[in-house]
Image 1 (cartoon, one colour):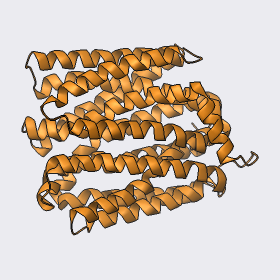
Image 2: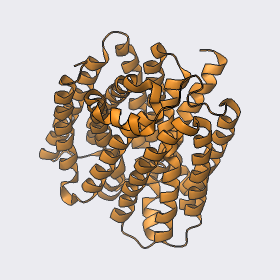
Image 3: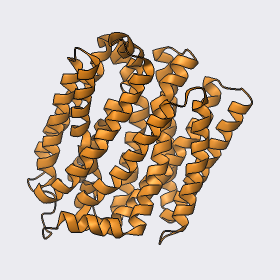
Length: 387
């Protein structure tokens, strides 16, 4: 990979890393936030759903605007907004103010959608699936590892540390993007496209919607599990912040190894088959988790096994499904990525909010969702043009 391509890859990876950073890095701070704002832990968990909802809405705006105004212009504006939101959260005097600035931060983090669009803009077609797989694997691993960072920030700087940490990281990415992206970088060699006509074309493409729906199903499983892990490991199993972070570190390593496996499979089989293998693993994780619950064998170690299987499933399915979808609209990548990501994150937001209300049936609900979503994805993949 040449120096310019490497610099672009680093930027795209950072876009994905930093977009998810505000979600998982805050997980170890749930008890401290609940105590600081005199709010139940379940309500703090619901704030994750709110963040994801606003995050989804912002992507609907950021992607189409980047097709029209340029990737660089929209990216820099969104990063700046996310920094303002993070600093506002760190200085919030009450819970409602915290939620307000979390919404501002989430709106800024909508720049996540531009990562998919920049892959289409900056890399040749034969490199896109590989680039997408690598940066999704790195970002997914970082998402799982970030609670370890969050635990250190919580211990060192209290709950405000995660917000200040985000602001520092986002500021570095702001400078990097300003240096390497040219103005009007959205479509320098392409004729202007109509956002409305592109959205109509996207809505009318059954294969595009099906591929993104598959990505949405597996991401909903992944996101729902991650977002409720503080309730499972810290509240129910009474792990310390550091022990909980170590559990997710193992999960992050598995996610990284899953990316290595997916990279190997990508060279040997079509995307549709890779998707089927991943969905099968997701079903298997659900069945195993159901058995653990029914046998009353719930421990940190036993729960890790289906978690690791689900991590492998996500690394196999998401990059493959998204790459297949984006190939259909590479000339209007911003708008197409906005539509697809909105499907994915709205599904995740609704799923995580519903799971937070499952009470004593939380783990069983997660297990059944793994099985149900996996089967649904397999049926959907069979109906695509590549299935």
